[in-house]
Amino acid sequence: MYYPDSKLPKVGTTIFSVMSQLAAQHNAINLSQGFPDFEGPEQLRKRVAYHIGHKANQYAPMTGVQPLREAIAEKAKRLYGANVCADEEVTVTSGATEAIFAAISAVVRQGDEVIVFDPCYDCYEPAIELNGGICRHISLTLPEFTIDWQALKEALTPRTRMIIVNTPHNPSGVTLSRQDLDKLAELVRDTHILLLGDEVYEHIVFDQQPHCSLLTHSELAARSFVVSSFGKTYHTTGWKVGYCIAPKPLSVELRKVHQYLTFSTAAPFQLAIADYMLHHPEYTGELPGFYQEKRDLFCQVIERSRFSFTPAKGTYFQLVDYSAISDMDDVSFSRWLTTEKGVAAIPVSVFCQNPDPDMRLVRFCFAKNEKTLREAGELLCQL
Ligand code: PMP
Ligand code: GLN
Image: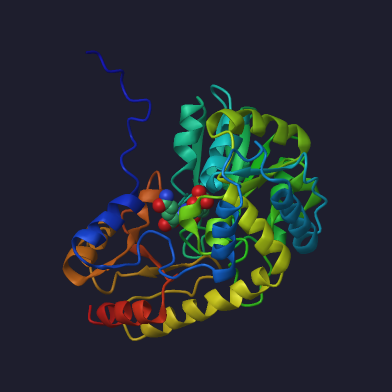
């Protein structure tokens, strides 16, 4: 039997599966893969059971159920001042991952270049490559993980089809500012470059800072796919419900891919989320405080450790520098921490094309109960 060469020769199993599996094998506290160890709102979970009991068990409409698309459009207006058409510009997808794949597949052609910023979330590059695109990596400038605007300017070519921005940013926890959006607008003005905004942590931004969505910037919104995930917002990563907001011409193309990728997303989850959004508009305003407490607790419990860190500005991840503890590279350190010390983390170099060999950073997920965070803190302070 002849098996074809891999279309993704550089790709292995994602670091999230690898580290979660290692954590389970060694009974380590799993602060690696990003998911909460607590449940989403009870009312929301009850609505899923309600809809399963009330005949919502066949295909949802391809674009998403009407009440959910309307709730998403209403939220975009209320929070970002964006006028979004629920019928033509909102598409519900099976997680943000599907929305990202569909957006890239909809517009990236053979030889097109797509710019990403390292460290970058791991699902972008395979999607670009499967569509014949070329992924151009630009390193964020450490220690603040800021965009090097000059490097971005120099990387733009007539073949640049898209720039992918992720704010709040996984894994660094930094956020883009209004000035950043203005600089981006300056660079793409008078070009045909599209943007993909990965904003899955849009409601997890701390210290009273606003989330600067691409949707708040009408010039950028006109050329953007903006993607989010209900998994992050409602502590339900296993439901895999996300969405994409994009101007009609882009949504038309995205939907052509979505309809043959998954066709539609689980109906009871969509209806339950729509009910919850309608009855609890206050929820997203409370989420930053909820996670800020967890960030602060985690930072407090590792305060007397030998890790150094700057508290995350957003997301539910905290980056830490372990150079005072070990000289191992981050992949070895993460494995050692998991197998020998009982706490699992994610190495940062795996999100970089050309990682700095001297970088000594790992990511911890603090979307955990107080008990979990305290127990992990105890172990981390012994290092
Ligand atoms: N983008 C980023 C930056 C993420 O952290 C995640 C989280 N898993 C995703 C996309 C994918 O979200 P989903 O689980 O909804 O597919
Ligand atoms: N986004 C999550 C993280 O960053 C993981 C998602 C996944 O496991 N695919 O940890």
